[in-house]
Image (cartoon, rainbow, N blue to C red; front, side):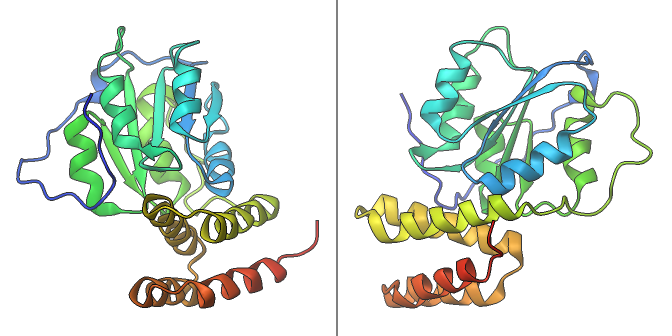
Length: 233
């Protein structure tokens, strides 16, 4: 079985066009969200409101495969950076399922992975952080939103304070407790996506300093400061 990594991919093939709009529309379907960040998961859950369907979440490749062994979702949203591997592997596996899943959406804080995601079978790619609720809902519209949403929000989904605290705790745990190179790379990628979603320039700068110097002390201190600044729950 081919195993992918989520390092930036260089591809020369032309991006293929998928006509999802021609697929049957349905209401009350199931969306499987494969996403490790609780903050991003909560944001997507809010964006999914009004779809008339069910959303189930898996926070790793292992959890996603467990879900998929039990039921067939109508759409799958796959984050490409996951704690136990690359979401490209899961997207490739989904191509062998029958009946075929109508819609596979890849999401990532690494926009350079778009070509790789489309090449292995994703129907659409969306870079994090999402610019608006409408941007995400439009991706799912052929399956879950067949009726135009005239009052759909155009701004970003509201941030969940509890979810943000959980992500900051997870970032610290990943950064300080994992020893392998692959685990450290995943930790830095998770923090980069979190910093972009928050628009936290100082955190992004600290991340770049940590990568350049190979020293995580400054980045760890800044994460702890961000955590202390969160209101008590």
